[in-house]
Image (cartoon, rainbow, N blue to C red; front, top):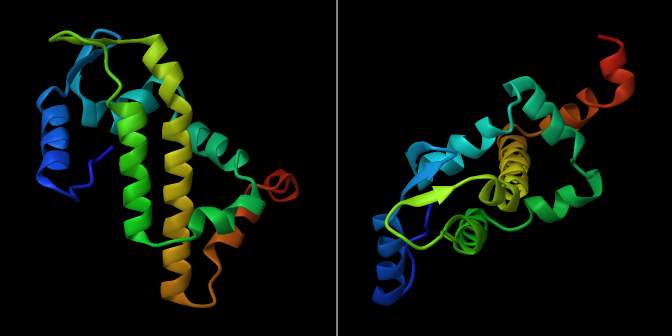
Length: 151
């Protein structure tokens, strides 16, 4: 996750300090924390892209979409930053950060939730940009059992 650079010099130092210690080993593979959150946790799930996307789609509660899409980009960035502080930057002490199953278990759902939110928010932005073409509705319809059974 990316740190949002707002606030006073003290908060900027905290973001810099976290980034200064971003080299980790995730299940023995050396990477930086950014790569771990962008790909490492997702790849560790062991699913191909289609299966992973299908799981994310199946877990969307249609009633929660308006709340997820509420706010604006600044609100979303600040919420992501708070999640990064609460999850991504919770690292063991020591110069080499050895991360494994415990870190994965503690954070995989957060990655899934953030990817789902990003997709729904992108759909909202595209819906607003293209007017009457309701991308979110088509996306959800395409995952319903009656539609997928006809394919």
